[in-house]
Image (cartoon, rainbow, N blue to C red; front, side, top):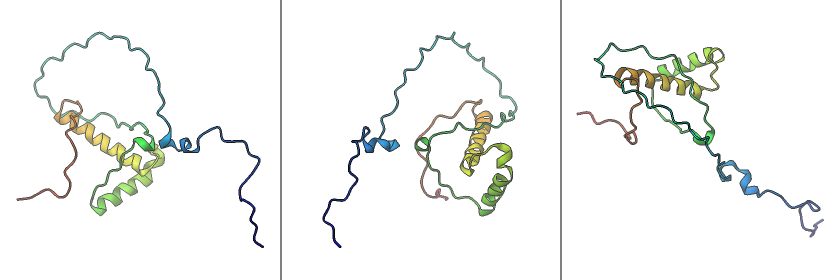
Amino acid sequence: MSDDAPLGITGLAPRKVDPKSMIARNRPAPTTDPAPAETAPAAPERPAKAPAAPRRPQAARKPAAATKSEQARVNTYIDPDARSRAVATYKATAHLEGDESFSAFVETALLNESIRREQLHNDGEPFAASGQLQRGRPVRG
């Protein structure tokens, strides 16, 4: 019952596309020429202000949807009760708030807390990035 004939499908036309380029990470990045930016008049300088009372955070912002390759994984350790509360809140309100996933819910929460702290401590401006987070537990003396 052994057959020595070669296995495979015959009579097919050769591929027009390299199979390796079918995987997203192997595709070249699309090139788009940005539209020429019109020159806007320079913004007037802000006058120096005396410290004011803390402002309320802006309305909740939904983060822009990013593709899977643009996303970064975040690992944190939180109290199990806090996680359970967040999961219960997400499950109860995701359909009302339009959350696509628990990750989107967490991302929105982190973004809103960042906005609150920027408004409270940095005049509403984003803080400058300053390297990576320290790994491990902080040293307590």
